[in-house]
Length: 91
Length: 417
Image 1 (cartoon, each protein chain N blue to C red):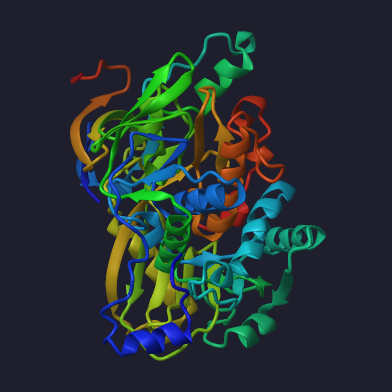
Image 2: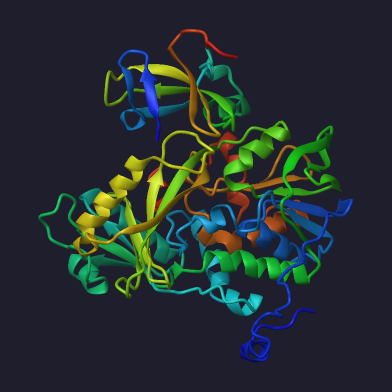
């Protein structure tokens, strides 16, 4: 359990949010032209990093807006929060 | 040859105040080279080594474990064993395991305390009723014992359940698998370790894998905290850390690792003599031989390796437990913990070769791997020894995520994720 600083609402409990998985996976422009392997890669394969991970979150019980987060998955410490479409503030 | 455990060995050792029992397994340093190395000394990994040695005559093998054996999810689960899964492929897989469980204590000469006390799955709405009836029929077509119970029969089988129709999610019925039950989780790891050790398997603890050495598309060995170990075959059974090992080999897996929590109460006299699971309200409970209620919560929905979980998940589970079992309202909880489970998108496991020759993965068991321990080890050993899957785990190939031939068991998984 931890607190999340929603970029729209401010600090709230994590239980107000829904995790949306790995961020910055770009949807293929022409899905019909993908091979089965490429489609599986887009749809199912995940980095599932132990350490610094970029991910999407949704404030479902608040403003219901999506945003991005940089979090250390080994200890749940949040490194940064930034809006959709913005560049990640840390590498 | 190890001394056999029996009533006579207990009497004999009583004379020396039980201080001279031989070690159940050695504590060797790694050799330079093995025919196969299993990464992960949990129940699945130790079972894999045991069956590799026993059925496939591979004796020059090792199990490397970063902590102590059975200290990960093997020691953290709620010990439930059942095989009432929906699809044919899953039924074959899980019932194969259940059949091995039925003779496991005798085979290992180690009491795994397998107790076929039955597992009941409850229905709380009409869709649950339809799903559970469908699953009962599917189970019976696959030769798995399953019966559907109405509300009165549920109450008769487990009298402490609140079957009042006035509660928020009333009990409308349930399924019962009588061959299902529980086992002592630590004993499973220890029993397999002892059996494997006796056949010459090196069980190497406190040995963390740091890298996988490849020559093109073939594995050459593993880098560990105890040095480089040369091997042609690596079987990875690392549960929540499967993706971490896969990344070392440049592979990606369709997994997300999440915390799953469990908790036990203070010990009390026998009150519940079966296992009751409720998928819809998310409450499952059984009682350990020590008398503690063993309660499983759901997963958190974010990726984490922290082996902790969120308090609200536990709170939600206990709310449901109290509505279903008002008798527990004054029970105090003793301990709570989390384990990291590796979840596949279809809630079914992967027991498979990979695109790298000599690298095998047994992962993705998610919230329900304990029940499959013996079968998983047996089938993974077959896959490693023959470089081909057994027919029972062919469907659990990693390629199913490319072909689309998924084995969706979210309904039978019975834990929210």
